[in-house]
Amino acid sequence: MSSREKEQTIALSAVFQAAELVAVLAKTGKVDNESLQPLIESILVLSAPSTEDIYGGQWDCQTKLALGRRISRQALGKDRNSVNPDTLRYALSMIHLENKLSKAPQMLSAIGQKITQVEQKKDHYDSVLHENMIASISGMYQDTLSKLPFRIQVHGDSRFLQQPYIANQVRSILMSGIRAAMLWRQLGGKRWHLIFKRKALLHALESRN
Image (cartoon, rainbow, N blue to C red):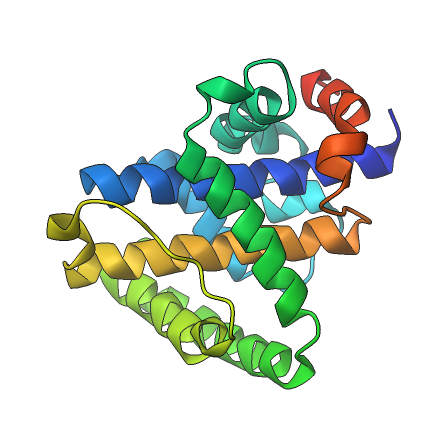
């Protein structure tokens, strides 16, 4: 296992964790904050020594992305049918949308500026999961990514999706997934790797080092 493959699986785990949280939130109106927090925090990390550090560092990264790691192993392994189809669709859609974003330098610049603005608000609240922080990140998504021709269609229970706070959570999680998809691409990850490099990625996912 190369260090590059290890880093790729960290980013991929974050993509699948975001996809799973969106799928569950859209249908139940509930989200696991322990799985959500590292994803939201990652949006505000503009530079880090390593991919692990974006998600809490060498020791915490495994725990914080445990959900996404499990879903990734299932999606790439023999248990693919056990993965929620919506989760798979959201994960692939985030990778596709990020690819579109990578070709829009002005939008990338605008997102960078907005992240800086949101990061400056963080000290005013006790958590990045405060509703005002979530609303700011959701607004960032609406002002940028939702303007691209390709949009991620989220399916779920309209009773939940029509609630402003839950809709903001969904968009914030999607933003964190786009962040992870960007890392995946920057680390050399490509969509076809999910088919033709599955064995190498699974080996890296199953390693505890």
